[in-house]
Image (cartoon, rainbow, N blue to C red):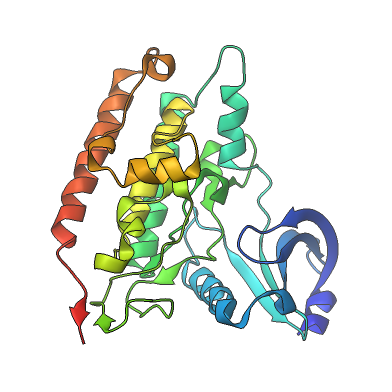
Length: 293
């Protein structure tokens, strides 16, 4: 209950609004240890009944994701009549997106060093492997702003945050609009995520559903961003970006000279190999069509 929250922590408001739910970010000081933590305070009255499962799933995913150095760690959860409070470790190193943007606007533009980029991508992939294999959780909203650094000057302190759209891949999703259809275990549905990072199969989920491999596509987009400072699939608008993702011939990453002429060729080989691996994996699972009841 909130009484236990305020007994343990001293709350101090400092930030803004969550993407998915009416939420306020707070910092809080644990009274006994004097250690700082982060709190997401969610106003329950502003969350529609049919979206309450998002809150529940976020907490479940956070609980299951404990113990990995590149996944944000849950500290506690409290609830009162008006709010739910999710307490996590406080990450003060800033967003990956902000870091990339800052370097891109320097003169001349910069990107992460090859060594730092390699470690960041490796650590992200290891975290996703842990989520998929150990927790049976698909994140479903991997984007640059959902990665925070625990420390500003330590690229290896990167962590995945915001599990609001995550789901256990072995459980049925209540948001299915496909009447008279049931999906095999491990198949997800629901057109969720962020357009510039979303996997193509998520956009056509009503036909076949998709698997946790949708996260791997998003990691590929993030790798491209880390290596070049730009996004691989970017239309004039979100609608145009969706059209690109729905057109198979447009899914080959491009390496324009304006962004890649001074980039180590090995970086391009890495992305090309990653794309081939993704296509092979997706092709081997895409036959798992929904079955009529």
